[in-house]
Image 1 (cartoon, rainbow, N blue to C red):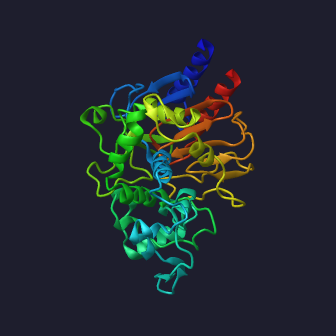
Image 2 (cartoon, rainbow, N blue to C red):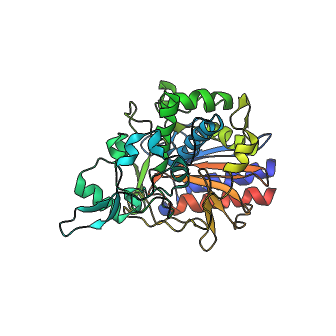
Image 3 (cartoon, rainbow, N blue to C red):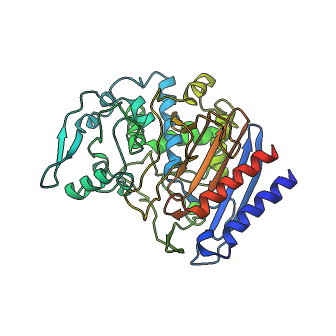
Length: 392
């Protein structure tokens, strides 16, 4: 694998040293694994442009939406134990979700026009992002409703921040949003513990993920990479750190972790649910969770409503994409070489991962740059992935 290591190191180094500012990011850590172990691990650049601390493989990242797959795993464990029925109304576990109403638009004063949903939200809908929930940075309507109602933003990690109207009748469309935050509350309700405690006991310990948590240890905080904001090509730390004593453990975005830790999680999916120190999911659960759950619905391009946080987002334009629990599924072989039926997703600060169970390979690219789908980050990630497949 020496030739592969050299090639992947070259991609990482070029990404952090490009002469043109728009083609450069401050730092990156990336990893590739197969079922029997990691085959590549590399780091390049700086944790922050404000100092000279180098990126290292043990650097801690704000994981943003890569958190979702971990929360969904905790839900699936509850299903295995008979604690959660995916098709029972989620309000049986978290009554407050029944208070959410469908927004049919706004009136002449800009106030939302609301009605009760005809169909109750289920935990399956939450895992598949079909409940009607959204994000303010991916919906002009949602952003307008937040501005009109004064509802707090989800970055504050409060219950009030989740009480947003539904954007459509539950079960009728795919729409990426706060679904997995609610799914995390389902886990807390049936386990009687905070989500982070459940994950630590049932996911992190059997996987050996010692540097992953909603609240960073002092050691983790000392290795934290800064989140950077790109403005007209320039990059500078923006000071963003998620609440470290949050009211809610946000199952949709709240974890901090390292790339080696998250690689252990990816490897579990290659190993049919088995971790290095114990089983996390049963093989039958993995098989059922790792396939399209949307039926005829499809994942489409996501349009930004807050350009400072995200560009328009779509992976592999022109190709069919579906959704599993809780991953994107590329229905066709991807241009990188990724097999049809593989699993993947991302985190807002330009973190990207994939899980190819057919080819027995998974990988993750970790950076801390806003807005999402930053060309310098995503283009080099796709080149990184392509190089992995060419080596196989």
